[in-house]
Amino acid sequence: MAASSVWPLIHGERAALAADLAGLTDEQWATASLCPGWSVRDVLGHLTATAKMTPGAFFVHLAQARFRFHDMSDQLIAAEATAVPADGLTEFRKHLGDTTHPPGPVGAMLGEAVVHGEDIRRPLGIKRDYPPEAVTGAANFLKGSNLLIGSKRRIAGLALRANDLEWATGSGPEVTGPAISLLMAMTGRAAALDDLSGEGVATLRSRM
Image 1 (spheres, rainbow, N blue to C red):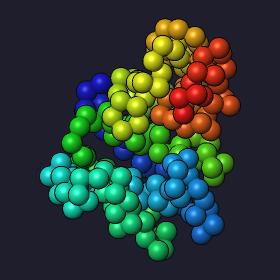
Image 2: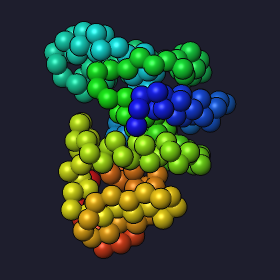
Image 3: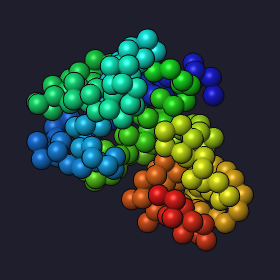
């Protein structure tokens, strides 16, 4: 998928998330997301930091964190996850249309937008009908990537098939379910496994 066709999807996901988060209570902002150790507010801070990132700034921040990626992420979240969550949402809205990003393929940014959006929405009980091209675009990128979250290894030897969209990948014991749930499971979100069926689910569960 060309970068020119990916950015509108990313921008659309950011705008939809900003709309969904308007009016959250302090308790909702503090809700644990599907990212271990990160609240809803923290995930939004991460998305803001990533939207503002450039390759040059990425390496500066990484060096400041002594080349520990997770430490760098925590430092950036601390800077963006404001004490007043509404201020953090205002800052996120300023960068909805940005096309800056860390080093790497733009497809990774689409994965971030969709997966982290769902990381936030599921614990809050917010439902979104994701554009099919956004979900399949993210899934097509992440199915071949082991960067950070190991999606390629997690689904190796399994056949994933969406039952709501025209999307499938791999061969072996089958895992079937909604495309968004397959995407979340391939990125290590165990909460999505209950939406899935097939003889490959047990294997996928063991790899979480």
